[in-house]
Structures are given as C-alpha cells and as structure tokens.
Length: 301
Image (cartoon, rainbow, N blue to C red; front, top):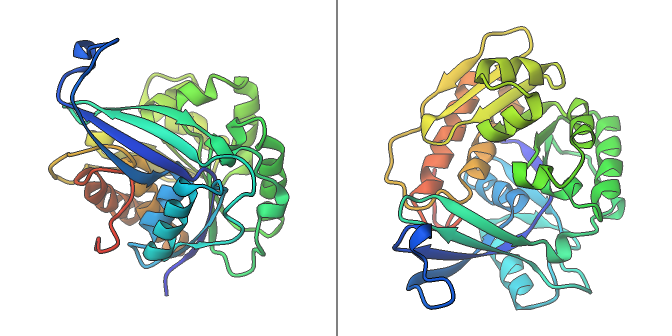
C-alpha cells in the first residue's frame, strides 16, 4: 500500500511556447515562429499529478476559476486520478503561466496566479489518513494566501503529519522579506529546493555547507541539481548524492516537481534517503522526456 499525500498550492494552466532560436534572437515587436501547446501546471498540481504515477495516492488543495481553463484542469485531474475538493472557485480566472522554452530546453516563466490567490483554512480537508503533506512555496509567497497557509501548517503540525516544503523560485522569494521566508523553514520536516534557492536561503556558496546550514531548520534537506542529479542529507547522517538518469531532454518544465513526487512517495513510507533520491531521479527523467510539466494519462513509471 502506497502513501497518501495531500498537496497544497498552485494549480495553473501552462501555455508552453517552444522557440527555435535563442532568446536574444527573438524578434521583439514582430513575429518569431513558435510551437505552442497547453498543459496543466502549477508546482503543487504537478507534484499531485506525478504522485499518481507512483504507488501513492494524492489529493490537491487549490483553486481554479469557473472558466474554460478551470474545466480543463479539473478534467485532467480526474483522468489522472488526483483527488480534489472545492477546487473550482466562483470568482476569478484560472491561474496561467506562459512558459518560454528555448532550444536548450531551458524555460522562462511568466505567471499569473489568478484564482490561486486567497487560499484559506476552510480549503483544508479532514487530515485523517494522510501520511504526508506537500506545500508549494508559491502559496505562502502570495500575500493573499499567506495567512491561510500558516493556519493550515499549524493544523497539520498539530496532527503530527510530516510537511515537505519547496520554497519556490528565488524570483518569487525576493518579493517577500527573507526573514519572513526563513521563519517558515523550522515548521517543515523536509525541505526540497534547487541549488539557487539553497544558496539564497543559506547564504552559503558551497552546496555541502548550504545543506548543513539548512539542516539547522529542517530534519532533512534535498537539493535538486538538474542534470547533475540531487544531493540530500538528514540530521545525524552523511550526505547522499545521486546522478540524473540518462534521457533525451525535451522540456525541463516540471522536472523538479516530478522529482519531488518520486522522492515523497518513497521517503514518506520508509525514510531511506538514497532510495528516495533515486526514485525522484527516475520520475524526473520521465518528465524531461516529454513536453509539459505533467504525466500523460498512460505514462508508466
């Protein structure tokens, strides 16, 4: 029996725009040919979706608008087997991210939070039966959701359910006082973040030093390193590194979220850091091999 995971945070529609030229060669003010597709996105929603490709069950807590994008996002969750409650909000449009993907696979994002703003304690379902909670940092970084997320965290901690936290992008964190962001870390059990975010939050330029600094706040820390794999450490033990699995990189959008899903599914049940990191790398390899941040309905891991 796999883990049952509650994922809290952003549910977005990704508009993926693939260009055949480097960003400096875009014809600003004119036309640049592109291949454009739409996909479900949002960090918390991506984690919930990839969890369904493991042996875990997932439930998403977030909002979409009562619009065409919202209907598509709800339908995708239903097809993938992601559970949800009160997902569609009466007011506001669904969150949308325009994702610009260059020929190297690098992505640049332009997010509009839409209906994701304003999450509140009433959105939290009954916590009975959940093995772990994942929270996307995009939600507490949003001033309209911050208090609601803090109330959710307090209730989850009272229920003694482990919290896995991804603080989101440095660009997002820079919009909030760094002391505010750092105040959330001791409330979390496991921190999942990339190298840039680890350096920003720890103030250390060396990854091993960053790990140790962040471990003063959380029981376990995992730093995602893209094509270089990942490194993790728990208090009182040695750091563990795993490589990225070889694959053809088509689009890196959502790779970190896919990694988080594989890691959480494994680590929440057995606390084996090495095997959980490898499980994360396996799911991430499936993600970068397709366009978009979510699995297809038929995707097998």
